[in-house]
Image (cartoon, rainbow over all chains, first blue to last red; front, side, top):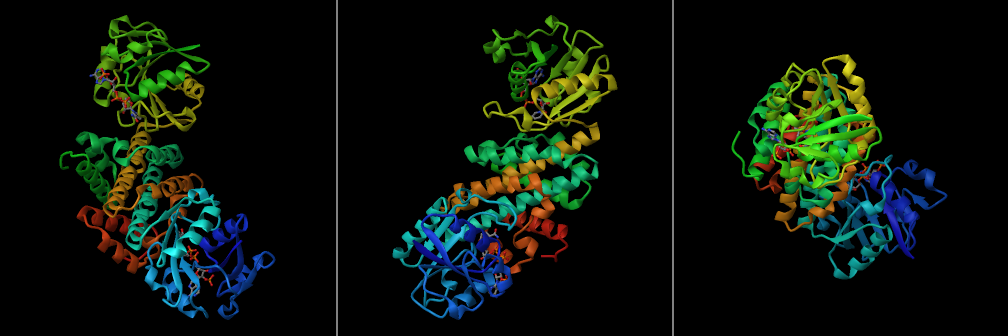
Length: 255
Length: 255
Ligand SMILES: NC(=O)c1ccc[n+]([C@@H]2O[C@H](COP(=O)([O-])OP(=O)(O)OC[C@H]3O[C@@H](n4cnc5c(N)ncnc54)[C@H](OP(=O)(O)O)[C@@H]3O)[C@@H](O)[C@H]2O)c1
Ligand SMILES: NC(=O)c1ccc[n+]([C@@H]2O[C@H](COP(=O)([O-])OP(=O)(O)OC[C@H]3O[C@@H](n4cnc5c(N)ncnc54)[C@H](OP(=O)(O)O)[C@@H]3O)[C@@H](O)[C@H]2O)c1
């Protein structure tokens, strides 16, 4: 058994707790949160604590707290030379106190406490300062059922940035579609199968190959009609910029 | 049995042919294309023709040709007072020749000849000039297994515009993510589960509720880091505009 100590009780820590609990080779030995109420309900399943000084020996300490608290909490740990990792896409591995053996265990997914997630759909990006520490992190990630990838800090921050495009920005395009359909009493629900199909398509073919539509075809008549239909200047600006981006990608003409 | 004649042999017509062929109550009686070679392979399953003057009587004529050819082909049909519909999201119902009983049968999905599609994931938006013609269109759409929705021309063109946001523009964000990950030798593939999860999330909750990330949190430190990481000015512009849009939606501060 590999023993893990979790620090933090947010979206990521909670999903990790449940998944490790259901896993075969990994056990969560202890769970720390500064506010113990957040983990009180798990007290029969795991030792809970709000005091860093009570932390016991474990094979891996996973710090899953807010990005800006990672560095401080890693320094406050009352031991050294043990393997301590964080779960952030954007925090440098060197932000962990150098008294520890250090690593990153970044789950590339969007977690929320309510939505269920299967860890086979959560690629884990692993980085370690010392090569020797890689295998144990790989082992616990594999034990979760996750695909595992060795990713250095430069790659990880790029992946985190790219995740903002495919997650937050894409979601905002859905939001804009919601706004414009509502404004004409059309149903956003009708777009849901298309939203899913668009995401499915790029599982198999590249986004480049998957592109279609008036921008790619340089169908200026439709583009003009669409711009006239949009009421908000910001929606027009998004339409123009992404149309231009598609045309640049596909070697089309300027708007 | 309801008899249908298909006109055109592109993505939509081909999918419709196969789906009607597998359906219970609808049969494709005849299939027209100006270039008969495109449908030659189906000649044992359906009467094929490239001559509008040979068109036989059918309950519904479905014109699934390029948008700019719909009007002309509807005028060239050598009969009147029969039910003629087109499948376009952006063409007005009045672009069909008024000698016909007119309708629209708009499948709100992204079709490509190769990708398989189940028509349960293809909402059909129906419009008719005469109320009496609605039920037969609803019947054949239901026979395909599709959700059916009565949608007027204003709503349809808004849905078509919204479809550009959730399909073409979203796909371009995937493309940008592909470009920036490749530029750092990071793997775009690692983003695929997140792409799918982002689309799945809004099947159940609104895009407004689903939003997360640095823009919504107004995490200016991360936003600045991300902008510095982007090399292309166009990528920076997309990042800024969509961040601003998220902040406007969620009542956040200006960049
Ligand atoms: N959410 C995602 O989709 C996602 C995906 C990949 C990676 N990550 C990364 O995973 C980490 C955790 O994210 P999350 O979404 O789980 O966060 P979250 O839900 O916001 O929870 C934050 C946790 O950090 C604790 N915390 C905050 N400030 C602290 C401090 N100064 N000292 C001690 N604990 C503190 C909070 O404790 P209290 O309960 O006492 O407030 C809470 O348990 C972050 O590094 C994030 O970048 C998140
Ligand atoms: N593709 C989609 O995802 C989608 C989704 C919803 C609605 N629609 C609508 O469905 C319709 C068809 O789209 P599609 O994607 O199937 O098109 P497509 O694959 O590009 O095929 C176009 C078809 O139209 C025919 N055509 C073009 N110009 C013609 C003319 N002047 N006279 C006669 N036939 C002509 C072509 O004949 P040849 O074979 O001889 O070239 C071809 O069979 C359009 O109104 C489109 O807006 C498409």
